[in-house]
Amino acid sequence: MKERLQALQAEALTKVEEAATLSDLQDIRVAYLGKKGPITEVLRGMGKLSKEERPVIGELANKVRETIANELDAKKEKLEAAGLEKRLEKETLDVTLPGRPVQVGGPHLLTSIVEEIEDLFIGMGFEIKEGPEVETDYYNFEALNLPKGHPARDMQDSFYITEELLMRTHTSPVQARTMGEYKGNKPVKMICPGKVYRRDTDDATHSHQFTQVEGLYVDKNVRMSDLKGVLNRFAKQLFGEDREIRLRPSFFPFTEPSVEMDISCKVCNGEGCSVCKGTGWIEILGGGMVHPRVLEMAGYDPKVYNGFAFGMGPERIAMLKYGVDDIRHFYTNDVRFLQQYHKA
Ligand SMILES: [Zn+2]
Image (cartoon, rainbow, N blue to C red; front, side, top):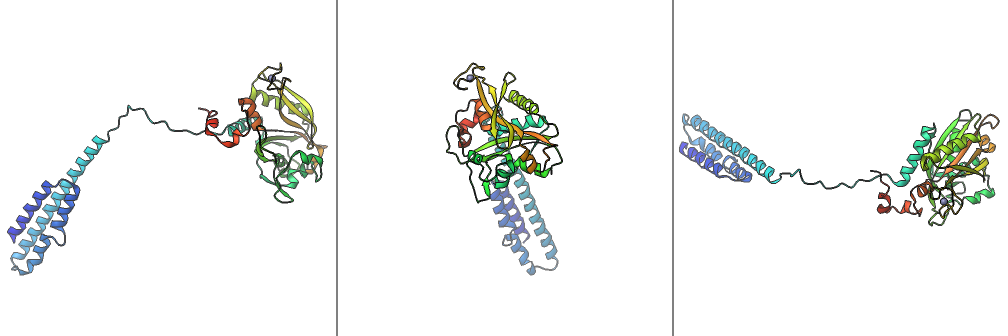
């Protein structure tokens, strides 16, 4: 029995020595040390041995097991190390190779313009307010001095959802909501950027969905010259310090008096060209002094408070600033168009 065990050990160690892969080692481990292996078999036959022989053989069998197991482990480590070495050799990185460029996205041109406008007004102490795009008839029209049946409602063809709910046609309802929130006893200085919706046939200058940024300043002793000052700063910062502005009388139901603001044409410097249709001026936005009725409906006493409001279309501003010729470019999301305006 002793010889059998020694022979088994020698045989197993030779095989371990010759093993070339980890799976070879696993096979050897199962074959020699497994439950059905020859060593287990030897141990099973121990019952036939004499009392004196039993512990001697037992000890030897355990020793043989241990030796084979140790050799297996040592060889395994060796094979693994060699494998790693090989892999490292194969997978060597050439750090001098140029990298693959990663496609980097950027904000949409409209997002950039809106953020630019926001930054400008935040700098002048305005806060940014948001409101729902599905709006009630009350906030969208009535609170802004446009009662049911008012002819000026026709200026804004609307998407109605029910009799009383519609897709907001301008961001002005956010102004009415904010004034309501401040309960008529606190100054309001806010801008509200957001999407608005009108029933329009889409073409180069019209879109049924577009963006607005409106502003509102309500306090005691707000004057028209304050509005002019704010709009002048806005125009110069967005379009260049050399731009001039002019205010023309206009009409909006929610402001009185109402104005429209033009900036001097950059292309011809006021001489008149095709861009400004020969006038030397380009229309940018509308505004005016908040109508007393609007203040009253929001809970502000028009004898104590007054204010100005204005509204602009970031699409139009982006089109003028960057020479975009079709409003639909903003919404068709052609990457070739959008990428031109990604800032590095
Ligand atoms: Zn011009």
